[in-house]
Amino acid sequence: MAEKPTEIALTEGVYYILLSLGEPRHGYGIMQNVETLSSGRVRLAAGTLYGALTTLLEREWIRALEEEPETRRKDYEITPKGRAVLLGEITRLKELYENGLKVTEGWQHD
Amino acid sequence: MIKTVVKPFMIWQHLEEEAWLNEMAQQGWNLKEVILFWYRFEQGQPGEYIYRLEIQDLERSKQERQEYEQLLLDSGVEKVDKVYLWTYYRRKASLGDFTIFSDIDSTITHFKRIQKFLLAFIAVIAFFNLLDFFDPITDIGMLIKVINLLLVPGILLWAYVKVGDSIKKLTQERSIHE
Image (cartoon, rainbow over all chains, first blue to last red; front, side, top):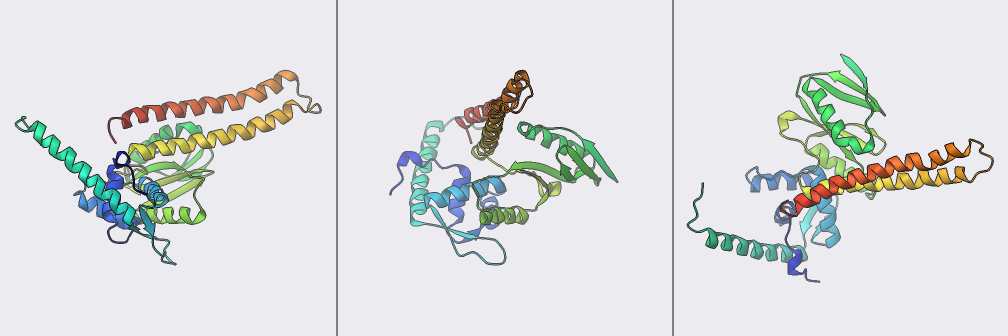
């Protein structure tokens, strides 16, 4: 089932989580990747990340890979559904960004 | 050196409790153990740790809880102690600011867990108080029975509403930013 366009204003955290799961990563790997991608600006706290992962699994935007038996670390990966949502979001962000630039062109930037 | 402090905090005061524990840590008193209202501190470097509290998510399976604990461990978080549903965490301040929740949505979810717990608690207490109320053998007088029936559930209900106020404030915030 396709997600309605109105449902895809993702949170910053979810956006970066999905973007991190183009390749399999475990929880802490996602945290590190998000921090690197955003040059240290976005730091996902453990409770926030784990809650988001649970919701994304329920929505089937991501899936869990086989768990490493000893370490209790599960790897996650984006699903085709998740990719579609992410691409839709990027289109939306592009619109926001371009409109922002168009309207504020010539405004004084401090 | 070890120091024990008795200080009662209620379930809806976890932010105050957290603030107090962090003040203590700023003075070099690091929490080591909690037994209800008894807090045991160990002396260490002032400002070495940041403390946070979290109420357990009862909907999580055992495996999910283990996985979550692993994630906390990986990110440098130590579990200090657990009192019923509340877990006390700390992380070295040198690793940067430490929170369990980094956005408004998940902070709201955490408050809602507290509300859920309060509701369950109210239901159980009200049930036993009602049994007591209609029990002809328990001869403690009508007045005490009525107080019993209303007082504790009343306080908990008030707590529920207070937590609800915090959720409302956060929801307002959320309508303009994350």
